[in-house]
Length: 140
Image (cartoon, rainbow, N blue to C red; front, side, top):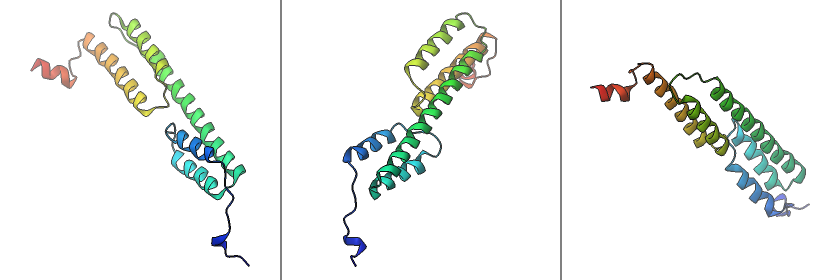
C-alpha cells in the first residue's frame, strides 16, 4: 500500500489559479472570503468540477451583488429631493459619475455616498440650515 503523502496529486492548469487570484480583487460581497477559500481548496485538491462550480459561484454572487448595489445607488439618486438652483444638473453629473464608476469597487461606493451627502448639505444650506459643523465653524 502506498503512503498518501507520496501519491502524486492531480493538478489543474495554472491559469485557473491566476483567474481565481484576479477575481479576488473584484470580490466584495458579504461572505466572499469563505467562498474564495472553498474555490482555492478545490483548486489545491486538483478537483476540476468542484473548482469550476466554486469559481462560478463566486462570479455569480458578485454579479448579483453588483446589480443590487447599482440599482440601490440609482434608486437613491432618483428619489433624492433637492430644491436649490442647479440641483438637476448636479444630479445629472452624479448619474454620469455613477455610470463611469461601478459599484463593484468599495471606494466608489464611499465616494458616491460623499457626493450624495454633499448635495444634501448644499440643499440644506440653500434652505437656511446652518447646522453642519463646517458651516458652524465658518460662522464662528
